[in-house]
Length: 268
Image 1 (cartoon, rainbow, N blue to C red):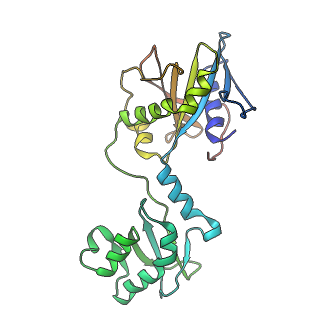
Image 2 (image 1 turned 45 degrees about the vertical axis):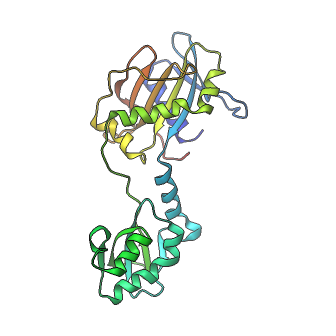
Image 3 (image 1 turned 135 degrees about the vertical axis):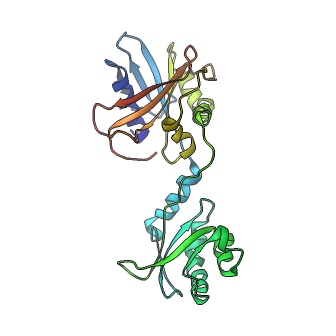
């Protein structure tokens, strides 16, 4: 099982005493991920899916790619070590190829720290780094292992948020054809979609901590009867935050769910 599936199993079994989530190991067929055995004797088909900010995930993977040096880039023409902050729209391959020459131009102009949104208008060398390479800030530093320009992790996107962003993220997963096909072919009366909200999907994810769910029922296709959104808790170790809804019940926050056993980190 991957991280979201493992976490989903622990969340359901912790939130519903006596429930058992049995993983369907044969994933070669179009079947749901789990058979959920409720303590009432009812059998439920449960499919796990993940809502992910793919742009953030892809650029983070590019920055961390150890085969290409990870966050570190040789200083090349530069005389000093640097820390730079790429934007989420940056091309990391392009940065690896061109950043040393661009920063060397800043050093020649005696610029050892910059913030692109303001400095690009008064310094042409900063404009190249900011507008062409999409590096929005940087500064000279001294690394324990010198001779490198290092890239900071890309920050999660900011902006206006609200509970509807989380509901919309879960709703998009409900409409995906593979999730609908797996649950539609299950043949059980109840068919649950369990949506893991990746912490990197910042605006929907933060709704767990700053908002209450709207008192409305979810818009779900006929293949799905219940939907649950969940993620790791930022308040309590080994807990998860969970919102739940169904065709019969509006969205509601079931609070921090304490997991019966510890879970590690992982990816999709």
